[in-house]
Image (tube, rainbow, N blue to C red; front, side):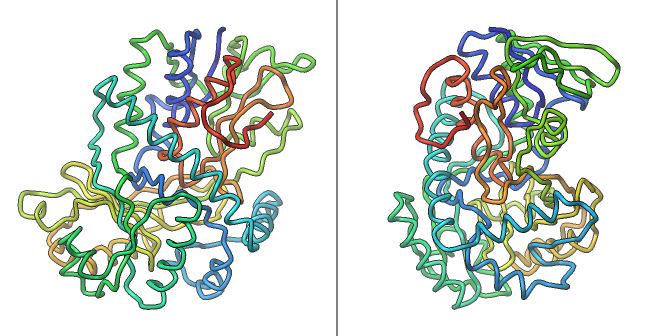
Length: 415
């Protein structure tokens, strides 16, 4: 089958790889000059299969009230004259209701574990390298209240089959000695030993090269303007320069821009950009021993911290601000302050790369994967903060669906 994938981020490239591996003739259209330059470029780097959870949960509502008016808040709502933004926000609040969090966590946990296993198999098979570390992920807390909540939550997640271990402060420091010098004393944490980390951009670029050698055709610098319907299927894709591309099936993996392309077809999906920030610190010989080598999540500030070779990536915060991709120096400075507080021995690092990207978020954090009402149009989008975690599993499952096979993982795929 001739298949056209729209978007060459980590989600789109992973789908292209698995579709080609299933024997299809695959092409990819990407508006940027190379793969992975949008949301995949500088994310937090975590393959957090054991922490694949929605942001929407009952505990978030009181936190949001405490964060109101704070420019450096982990979750910031910038009101706009945009109905899509307000509708998304209202649906997010609804998903915070008790019971819904557990339901969505269960769905995400299954897909995330499948995706992690698929990534490992792909790495073993191809030898792909992307500054990966298989040392687990440690969620740590710096307050007693957060630690008690984290311990309760860890027990609840174990009932869903999610493996985590509650750790004392001493055990956290034993896992990651760099935390011993934190100016904000670590109280305890929860450790997921089977989770991983790695550079999503590097992975996307390398996998695109492997896919090209497998026969996948990548066209860069092509901005998709419209999908051209003909009855109950898509006849072609039209680019902004008027060029048309036809295929037997089409996969929309345009991240936050997916709903804009689908809306003229009457297909409305609950995806809205959730802007996240990251700072990347280059580590010289003097800083390498002082930097963490276990991937971390700071529960108080909602930050993820990953060692990527000779760099330290710290990412987090969520901002509903439409399609604005500008970098807020205030928010990046807040992230850097926390890094200095947690790892004071890194204070000599002054060259820092600031970045912002738009995560394609659904209110419940569950991605949209599968067939639409148009029989040859498929979605692989809405992965939010979990795009890197879920990319291989989503792509592999979608390849099964398009090939007429039942996916190996239990998940509520679009039908």
